[in-house]
Image 1 (cartoon, one colour):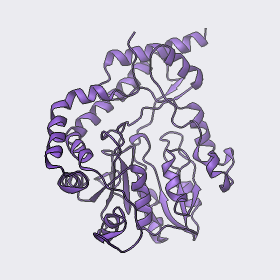
Image 2 (cartoon, rainbow, N blue to C red; image 1 turned 90 degrees about the vertical axis):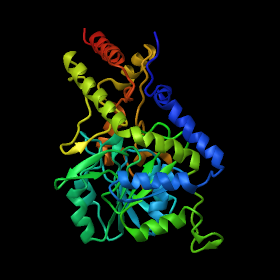
Image 3 (cartoon, rainbow, N blue to C red; image 1 turned 90 degrees about the horizontal axis):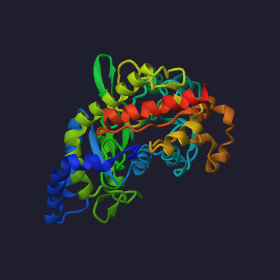
Image 4 (cartoon, helix red, strand yellow; image 1 turned 180 degrees about the vertical axis):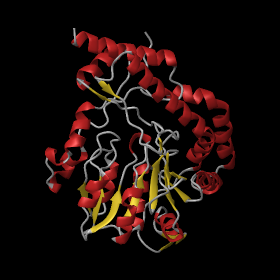
Length: 379
């Protein structure tokens, strides 16, 4: 039986093969590979998509986070409050600049940072709150933004998994990455908007920060060979920008298709009376979740993972070890019980296949296999 992957980029490529060929050919004919017209056009199109926030391309989502922190002068003696349940770069961008990460646990329903815990951990050293819009769903940052503003604390959004996600705030649609001082995106190939290599972007409505990020991504140079400060070599290349311009035109359609996949999973689990064993992701009221990952909480997670893999159904664990327990962050002194929800999610969540081209028949096969697993353990 044919394997069902967690993500099938080949199916997606087949839908846009001719458009991609034309875009790449245009770059090759131009021989303009670093920054240049394609990157500028992509930045302008992203700015329009992000409702006017200035968009600055860079080399990766990790670099986007580092550049955002650098633009705010984060360094030794500063504290940054963030989540322990995320990809490694969320925290490494803090420590590599000499600042101290402070972990606030996460919400057990949305998996996003617990905003009350953020407020509880504020100190005079807190300079930034770095929430992650995990798996494609925004955190309700309006609940804490007023208090943070009073204390002079900036919000930097890690929207690496959430390009295209939005939340209604006071009746207006606010796109992920445009609410705080800066938003950071990844265009890693597996993302909803993914290139054919590495790439990233920073968004901001602050003209001063935008100008500084543009300098920092080219070694801190405002003019070639004239360096105002020490920055990074972090430029989005033209080939990636050309590919991303094609994909951006289709993003809304693909995100809608992902939402259909998520809805179908919920129906299939309910029909098979699996909801006592499988807890689907919760979409917070007012949110537009784009399901970069579909990661329900499941009973007997590790055994289910092995069962599905043996039947040709791809699945993955995000994330098997919380960031507050990673060896390289042991100097911070956190214990497992300091973030119990994150620890629980690390034991219970299992990411199932989710991509626009996943068929209804494949989802039925996945749901049937999950039902078979739990029947075999409860008979």
